[in-house]
Amino acid sequence: MKTFQGILAVVILFGLLFVSVGTCFAEGGGLRYSITVSKFENRSGWAGQWDLGHAWGAVLTDSLNQTGRFIVLGEKDMRNEAMQEQDLAASGRTAGGGKVVEIGQMTPAQLLVKGEITHFADGTAGGGGGIGYKGVRIGAKGGKAEINVVMYIVDSTTGQVMASKKCYGEVTKKGLSLGLSKGGFNGDIGGFKKTNAGKAIEIAVDEGVAFLTSSLASIPWTGKVVLVNGNTVYINRGSREGVSIGQVFNVGTSTVLRDPDTGEILDETVEKVATIQAKSVKEKIATCEITQGSGVEKGMTVTYLQ
Image 1: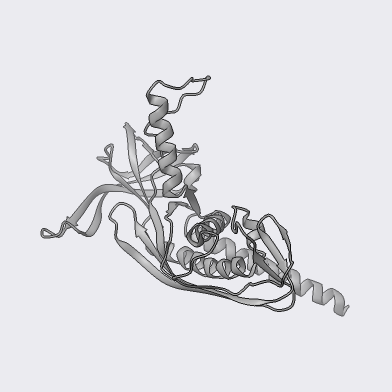
Image 2: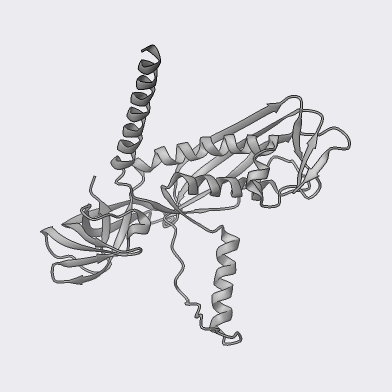
């Protein structure tokens, strides 16, 4: 009987946890933000046989993908390579092979994550003669790895820093240790996370991602009107961004206030003209119906009505 009551209590606990998590996600409408991870600058003074900034960016990108709250775009170098490929295809110097690379199809990022690694210590010096596999060395000693990072969330349109966070990760592994052999981080995120350095970075990344996700409530989710046909309004946000049938949005004209001396954006307001509701949704677009107001025009700003 006691065993049954214990199992029932665990089931109830997990049920409440599930409802709580679902409610939190519903409060944000399940909407996703497009985001780009910029390469973090290594200001720690640490230099090794692997790129610290690249390893951090890879773990951060993986963690952001896991949340389901973001459309994670490639890092700057990846996007530059994609644009170079578009330019090459447009030059007519490549065989089409049935595939046409279109120019102007890059998904714009709403948010940019950037920052600096201010301190890093990799104390994973393994014992002599350890076993190596895919850049990971198993040694006989343990050590401490720690990292300090300052993370910034930037509005990609205005360049304004919307929030910042100092993240810290530390791991001390005694006994059998995992370190990085010559060649270091090679893109194998799973293997890297098994090292002390990888675990320390993962802890700091998790702290940063949790902060970023919690900050979304204060970051406006926006879209644009791409076409108006009578009472039907098409917006440039779809299932990819988490839009679902029945969601309600405000539409209005956006006014940007700039500092006359510096040109810096001081504030941006949206004057509402109408309310629309999603009636059908495709991957990159949603078809909506005007439920209140009028005067909706192409190019107007769409905001989520919470």
